[in-house]
Image (tube, rainbow, N blue to C red):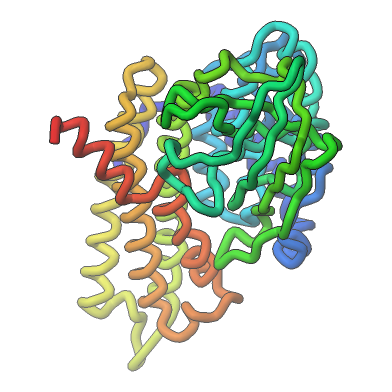
Length: 382
């Protein structure tokens, strides 16, 4: 693979910081988090202390003040390529997906109220869009918020909410009007508000260390001061942040596929059958050659998409294309690598089995492959 030019020395130094953090704080707890299906809250404060959480939050509020998505990409690559625990996804989720709502859509009073705690890792955040009856179609959101004096009264339910068990602040997509898009708003529901309850920590095929929850809202009184942006501007706020979310998923998928490929390459060199390494058989060589080529093409492609995002030029259609292409390829590559492991690939003691479990969700969350293709197709005028 050709030498990459995307990163500078400071990004590579940050890569080492991420690696050291994982070795110190994640490795000793990985198995327990997998069993408990939830990380310790101390992970967030430790990550903030080491500068790998909240680096995009302005310095005046205790963050790193670095508005450079390449740092996000470095972290995604490290966590994807060397997946010690899916629990670190809870940290990356906040940096890449949730924090922009709290840095870009908040007013000055809200920034002073929330950002210092978020930057210290003391306030864990989540975004709640998906509902039991609606997923990728934001216009189908039914959780309703009715204005009553200085409050909104919220009723409804959300599901599949990452960080749902640990979150102190949840940016909730609610319906404040009947228009499918202009009737959506974003309200921050806080831990402890009467009527706000967490349901099950849902059991998943993969990503076992990441908590994923049902949330319920029954006559929850949320101060109007917790409204993000203007009433009725929720859809625009959501759409504004979705391209970075989808790019993040794509970046992580390429890196994760690279990691699975590298581990499989070592395996086929060492594992023998009929007296010789299985990698020496023509079928194995062809499979590995095809995967290596796919990954080289995708690496160049996704690095270019990151550059476009840095320049503010990444379109929603390009983000959607990157998301569906890279995640579908990720699932395909892990599947082919598992096949090369034979029966051992089906055993969870082998990393490739867990890679297979964790990869499957990538074509679904952040918008399904089908929705991504719909976005791309509409962008073509179809």
